[in-house]
Image (cartoon, rainbow, N blue to C red):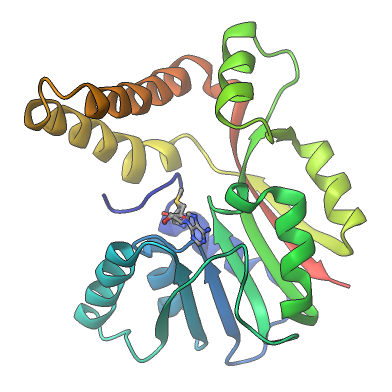
Length: 235
Ligand SMILES: C[S@@+](CC[C@H](N)C(=O)[O-])C[C@H]1O[C@@H](n2cnc3c(N)ncnc32)[C@H](O)[C@@H]1O
C-alpha cells in the first residue's frame, strides 16, 4: 500500500504551504506516519528535520527504505513509539503533523496532550474523519458510530480547537480522489489478492469483509463525510 489512510502528496503540500511562518529549518514530528508517504513529501518540500513516529516497525522499515532510495534519509529519523506517550521534551517541535492518525488517541485528547511539545506559535496539522453534513442517512450514521464513535462535524472540531488553546489557521476537505487514488484503489486490489491467499480462513475473511464494507460505504455515502485538514497554531 502506498499509504495507510486517505490523503495525497498534493494535499500534504497544500496544507504545508498554508502555514504562514515557519523557521527556515523547522523541527517536525510526523505522528502515526505509517510507511510515510506524507513524511517523504514533507522532506521534499521543507528544509526541516523530520521525526517520523509509529508503533509498527514494518511501516518504519518501509519508510526508511523509501527515504534512502530518494536520498532523503538525512532529513528523516524514524522512532518506534506510541502517540499515547510521546517521548519528547516541552517545546521541541515547530510543527506536529498527523494525517489520518489523531483518531487513535482521539481528536481532543491529541490536541491537548501534544500541545506542550509544540513551541508557542508553532503549528499542529491533522487530517480527521469528519461529518460534512448533518442530515446523514441512518445506515451511515450507525456504521460510523460503530467504527469511530468520536467522529464529529467541522463545527464541533473547530470548537475543540479553540477550547484546547489553538487558533485555527485554515481548514479544507480532502477531495474524493484523495480517498481513491492512493488508498481505496490499492486497498481493493490487496483485498482481492488476499481473498485467494486466505480462502477458508474465517478470521482473515472477516478482516477483508470489514475493509470492503468501508469502501462500499464511502462509495455510497461520500457526500456525508470526509477527511478534513485542520491547521492550528498553538497560542
Ligand atoms: C490510518 S494510518 C495513517 C498512516 C499515515 N499517516 C497515512 O496517512 O498514510 C494510522 C497509523 O497509526 C499507527 N498507530 C496506531 N496506533 C499507534 C500508536 N499508539 N502510536 C503511534 N502510531 C500508531 C498505525 O501503525 C498506522 O501506521
